[in-house]
Amino acid sequence: MKDKIIDNAITLFSEKGYDGTTLDDIAKSVNIKKASLYYHFDSKKSIYEQSVKCCFDYLNNIIMMNQNKSNYSIDALYQFLFEFIFDIEERYIRMYVQLSNTPEEFSGNIYGQIQDLNQSLSKEIANSMMNQR
Image 1 (tube, rainbow, N blue to C red):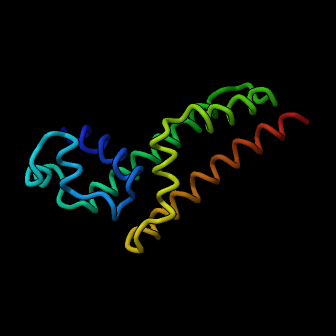
Image 2 (image 1 turned 120 degrees about the horizontal axis):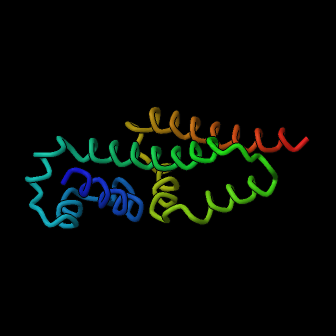
């Protein structure tokens, strides 16, 4: 049930943002009572933090899968970028965009994760470009 709550919360947060998503919304999306959410999570904040972690794990996994490939051709780079931009589930992209509207209490941790993700992506692009020479 915990995974289903997070899965549905990602969709809701990606559509409505943190402030626009209520615990009632999350509970209804998984067909449980709001009070039942507290069995799995202690607050909306903890659901959001877990949702953000899941989003970053998903995006980092895509980058890591590409790093495990030994083919660093320009064509492989184009394919990776195309897949990164167009094949990612839309809700993860929307969630990533919503992070710019994250309340102050989350911003430090989230911005650090965004920087880490951007560095991984930049490193992957740089490796591909360097191996073309």
